[in-house]
Length: 182
Image (tube, rainbow, N blue to C red; front, side, top):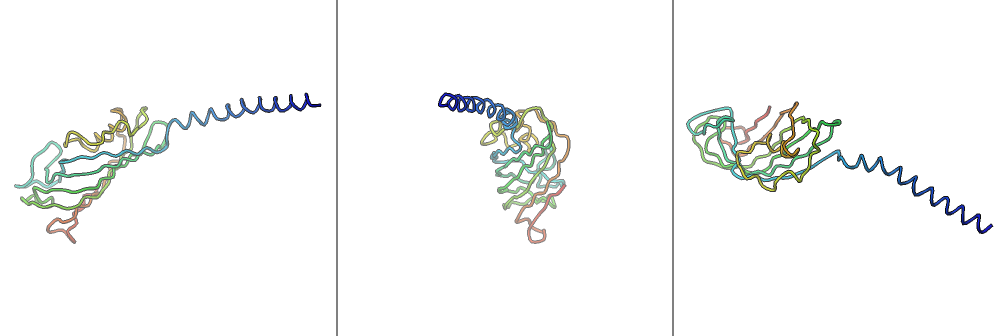
């Protein structure tokens, strides 16, 4: 009887290990691709543009520049499907103006920046915070380029592009708040 009991426990233990290992294998495969990825980077003297040109703005390939920003970008990628991600770039920081973004007139001022930009991204590369530098070396690096960094340079923007930014302390705006929305 003692031998049967020992064999039964041994058999149960032997069967339990392979069964749990088999059950864990599919979970481990799915766990390797996260459903949400977050990364943070900082930029100083980031070029900020407006749609209004004037004597105070600086001509750039992305439009009339009105300010230099110091921003922390928090990127959040949420998996939509196999190779598609919704990526939101939240920006928070300060601007130093060289022009009024509403009139294009020369104006020196500063204030806070709060906003976000969202893209739909397709990539076979899984996004990772390890691809994002702690600080962007080039102040002209666009947010689109930063999103591409999240995918190690293998991102295709397939939709989105919606944004909403608010700037405080802008003369001539209601409550001093200038909003860029698109």
